[in-house]
Length: 115
Image (cartoon, rainbow, N blue to C red):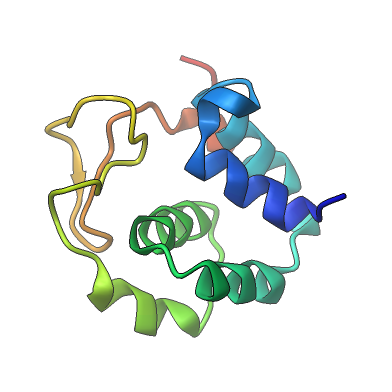
């Protein structure tokens, strides 16, 4: 058994095991109004995976969700290494400066738009 919040985090960590990245982003978008954002923040802090903080911060902000934890998380992001939205895909020139994250996948699924 797992919570919806943990399931969404697992999707960002291993989208291939969750129906693909577009499916994962669609789930975040559909679950936006049902998320316990404090539970998401707690789990991200507990897992203590740098790129997960970057991905979750980016996704939540893209969904219009703010949280005080972002002030702690944002400066911890480092450009390079595994700082890609999808770790299994190559780097893309499109880059989110705030989260130091290569946006190497379409993000329209967050808003219900398929590519």
